[in-house]
Image (cartoon, rainbow, N blue to C red; front, side, top):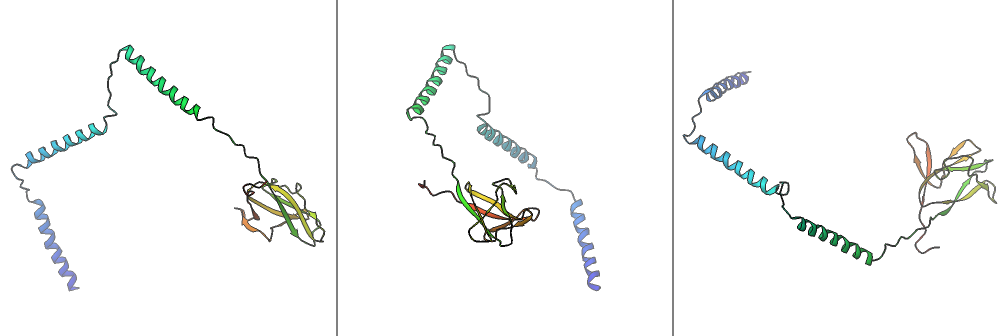
Length: 195
């Protein structure tokens, strides 16, 4: 408690000294105003010199040319354009190489011995339940179909018996913003030189 009073007494004395220093008049050197004005003039001159150098390309210029001079300048520009066109024409026309659309055949397989019908839905068939049915293979419960797919990332799932959504257990799973799971298939392009 006594420490607090000592701090308050010390602060009061400090406040009075600071206030007294702030209220006392400031005495400036006799040449203060002249020095201040000289520095301001030097700064203005420096800024004008810098901006003139920096903005020389933005300042307006007046060029006086006779009609004959203007015609000669136009002919020079046209000659330069014609010469550059000839250089490009001599190099030949650019060759356009058409790449054929490539597809890879992908086999979709689902093993389900209880299924009566299976179809595959995905971004490659507009998620249509009826468009791509799977066929029963030689072994019972093995359903498969081969589809031509373009290279890239494809999402798909199986529809079992027309209503049950099944994610391919042999593939990478992904979920959409609604929490619906689907399978992800990455189709690589055919190797270069393959036919």
